[in-house]
Image 1 (cartoon, rainbow, N blue to C red):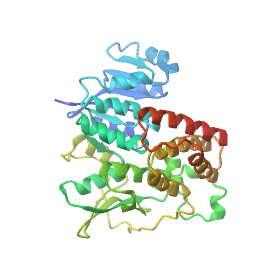
Image 2: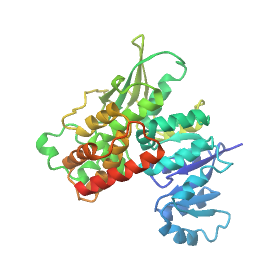
Image 3: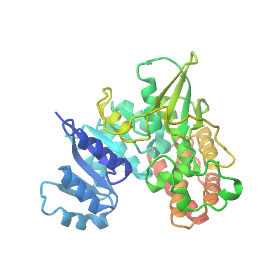
Length: 382
């Protein structure tokens, strides 16, 4: 039987590459449902090409146009609204849900998928950043496996497979360093969104590319790793690795280090999450270690303050990571819209951390309220 897959965010970078994997292995995988926020035209094309049983457009303004595009395909059911995202992931035929939505919006449908006992292929890091403890508790309660799709967390996961109860002494989380790794303070003062969107090694969506440039993305990945692998943040070390060949590594109690290496290609961690514990063939470039050296550097926490702020949010715990995530989403969007400078993003996030209501033991409703409050505060500070 082919595995039935629901892709939350099929029109984004991760979603489109997941469809490449499904296309290459159509004997193993089948699309059940595809969703998008607003890109209804591409969503319709994908649905027809992959014979989806259903599609969901989260922004209801595009529901009617999507219905029109799919009017000649009555076999494809069309739904609209955020509530439909939460309902569709619970559909009986679905075997696994790839959560490739961006930001806080991915939290609610992921929770519904977990409660339905689906296998979660997690590409939406904000889910664990915002509500890591809640998500891990639910996954245990409903026996819903979570397989990481981020290249770094997939690398860590691949490094610990077969290690069972062997103690992890340290996680070595690699980072490309983004486009500004070697910039001087004077150069950093004048960077633009065009500069920030020129990532040296990865082809990603705009939001995550800006987060990579500020290194907030790496801070979020530290939080995600803390929940996925049960390792305290002070034992997760960030290494700047410009070549993006060593995707991450694990150091064990005996001092040995296991790493996963490969060319920068997101299809690999996506496919591994789909097929685990098996490995199957994948087309594409192969790693050639003769072509380039492997370099590692310490991150500059003074220059990349967002990474420092992420570590501070982990130390405080509670709803503080949720506060940081919400403020970051606001300033990230503002920077892309030329309403905020690169340097001001960290300033505003730090101020929101000091102003927002702190809760040591948040529940889901608290996360929702925290997200709304932190966004309002960040908007006021812009």
